[in-house]
Length: 164
Image (cartoon, rainbow, N blue to C red; front, side, top):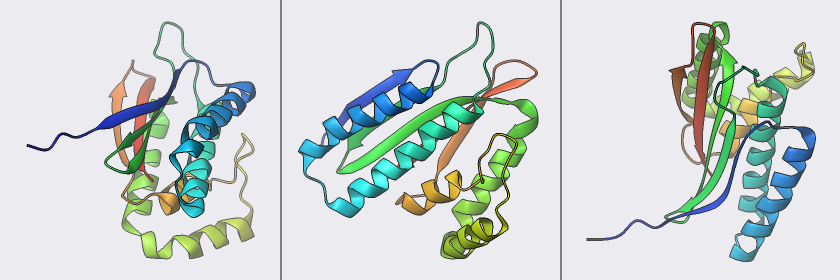
């Protein structure tokens, strides 16, 4: 019976700051470069990691005595897997699920959607243009998978998994 090899390359759980993002991206480069993957795949992996980490940094809700955001990079069956979790408000859960479901089911239209978002320059109150999930989905070889777990009546732990 074949054995599935899965290697954890990088793991972090805690408060994500600009310095944390920078440090994790440096570590990602250190652990991935020696694997000798093709340049385009490395760019997609790095770009996806940037978007996920910046999303956590910009949008994570800090709660007392709750879970912390997490980021894990694994290598399994010649694929890179990024698993991340973030704390979100309960009121944002359905919108986020709808957006991911839409992106997962409309891959051929992503380039057009991406361009329209850039043209319209819709910036959120936190400074983002809402393009992160588009970039993540465009870079992934499979649909973005997700799960949510309630923390309390106001917050959810929102986890995604992306294969690059």
